[in-house]
Length: 203
Image 1 (cartoon, rainbow, N blue to C red):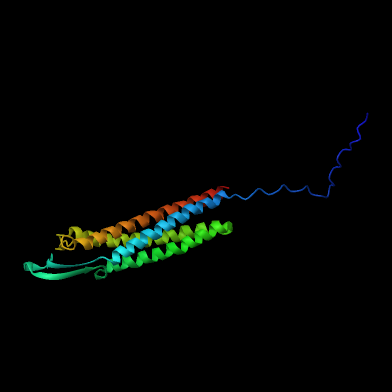
Image 2 (cartoon, rainbow, N blue to C red):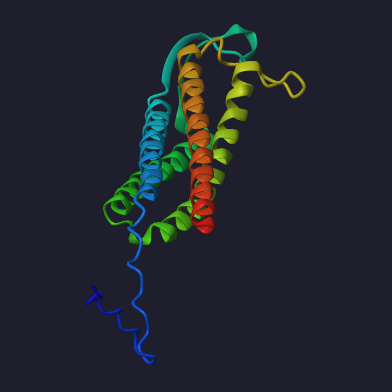
């Protein structure tokens, strides 16, 4: 018995074949921003603690202060705003703290709307490098002054003062350590942005 099925008619020569359906959007790219948000929250915590500890570094002592000849008993007060290096440190870390808040909110917005994720990653990488330079310079400046207070410099006759202002110096060291942590977090953020951009360029 002959088959009654008719072969499918070939498409007309002037009509283009239908396009295949577009692939589903990749959602794994957004996952990089979850790590970005976590690091920026850590950056906010480190810079905020560094600023608070530095601002509260104040100590009043009564006794023989190093550098005063004759062992004269005087009352001495040590505060962070007595040193331009520490004032710059507070200003720089305050800027970094504010920056971490703004970029955390921006990173969360990218998670909700990942359309402009590549542009945000590029801007994050550029601004993170700039803020890293600010934080690193402030950390180095404050650290050098704190080291002189801790060790002194006998070549130029600068006496160490941390033996007298011990609590004050403890605040300085803790604040500088948190600033160093903030610098490390910024390095990780830069690496994350660069790696994310590299992965997207390869897709």
